[in-house]
Length: 422
Image 1 (cartoon, rainbow, N blue to C red):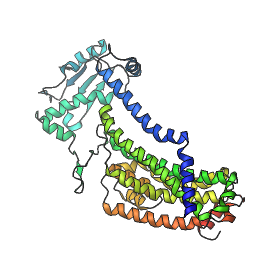
Image 2: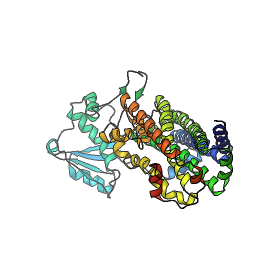
Image 3: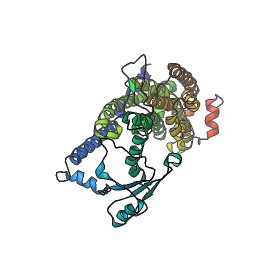
């Protein structure tokens, strides 16, 4: 036990005294705060007007497309438009009694575009758009105002009914256990709908593999430098393994907690600085589940990395094996779009229960929707069982003859060793 603690302290001290470690741990959140501060600064200066805008805001305006100040025209051949909402922007639209007059103004440059509502609009839904030049990018924004005007008239001037028809479902989810927690409305128009689950998945992918990779790097370097020979004189291989995996795991956990707490603050500030992210919320209970799934995920992948480090003669030969080991953890990243769109689908549930894909997939689901408690607990139990089996298999590789071996690494040898036949 004493030898294990000595190895643990050595690994922690070796890592935390590096400037590069703290640069990564604190630099990522700091960069996020700097970006949000800069965005907020630019937004405030843009709102104060072009004359008083700061140099930074003026630089940002260079890359923005200049809006066309000319109004748009429309011709209502369907005779549907009889009334206008009280807040309708009349300065942006000009109604024409016939198409000929409207075309003449379009040719003269008095209007930026012309929209002709077909006589059989109710049956066909057709609107013909005329523009001086082909511009498919702004076609959707052009028709937004006219679309609302048509909806207003089709609903006999009932603005509340128009809003319900355009957005019939405004879903708000709350839990019985946590009545104060409200999940953001799941709308594909909201950046938070995609950004939050994606960011959480990437965070856990980076921290789990980063911490496990540090373990592989530590063992590999000690084998190359032949420090491992000195360590084995006073430490048993199993004590060396446990000291390294626990020590580096604690350092990785510190990094994860700092990033998660920073993410909570960034999620709150982002809604104030970036209106598109106003719905972004990071549930507080995500921190607790995050710590649990990190520890269990790290336990499995760090064990695999330690096994590779025990078998390879040097770090150069470890790339082939690490690619195979991390491939399961990458599968959810390849399927991230369907997982975010349907976080409670059969695919999402299966991947969140399978131990090798569970850490990242389950955290994505927890950030995207309400996950049944039985699924969370089942994933934890399966991860614990898989972790125990993995550690038992890898501890068989931590023998003096394996650690001191200089034989070339082979994938077949890895699987035979994990199966207890090596």
